[in-house]
Image 1 (cartoon, one colour):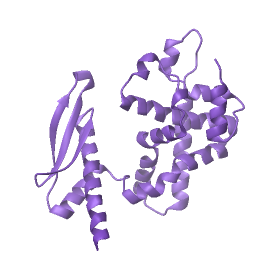
Image 2 (cartoon, rainbow, N blue to C red):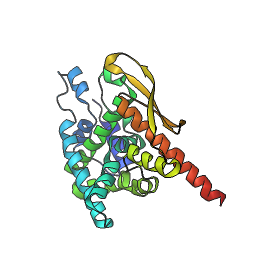
Image 3 (tube, rainbow, N blue to C red):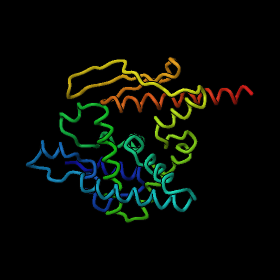
Image 4 (cartoon, one colour):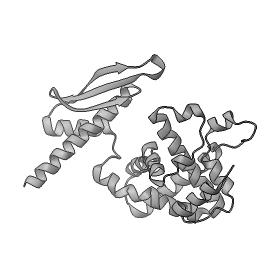
Length: 240
């Protein structure tokens, strides 16, 4: 295979050339691709993902410890928000390695949710590849640049908090009642069900969410509800 696009990506987006470009190629190779090309491809990214996940957690923990004097529970929640699938998947999209990810034909046409998970796994695998090829400091710099730079945003919008618990606090503070979740729609076959849930405060719809389980949809609805309250707070402050 032509590995030039991988080296060009490394130079343009990562700022260096890989000594062993096969590490980057492997980091962007999904297990499904290996299963589809068993005769010619033998390595996928799961071992690199395992390594990168550990490095990401270590660097994030060290960063939070050195920069904030908060209880363990708070910093654990902050770290979880920084390294969750949505965050690192979004960082992967920003980097633009998606066209280089090697997937089976089936996975290429999979759900958006599954695709986001694959991109996030690749991000962790890329961290592992950088660490092996360039060392800890370069991997650390990569994490600082693409993940830890989001900390101010996470603290400002309080997205590190559990959405359902936080929304309940806001609902009780603003309306004096506990929110109610109602399933608005169920779609799809049993193996790929989709639920749409609305969250109501005093019978007023505050947010809707979609998920593959009612719990997931409720969490998404709560996030929308939090945004609604935050937007109202911001508008009230601006009006003063």
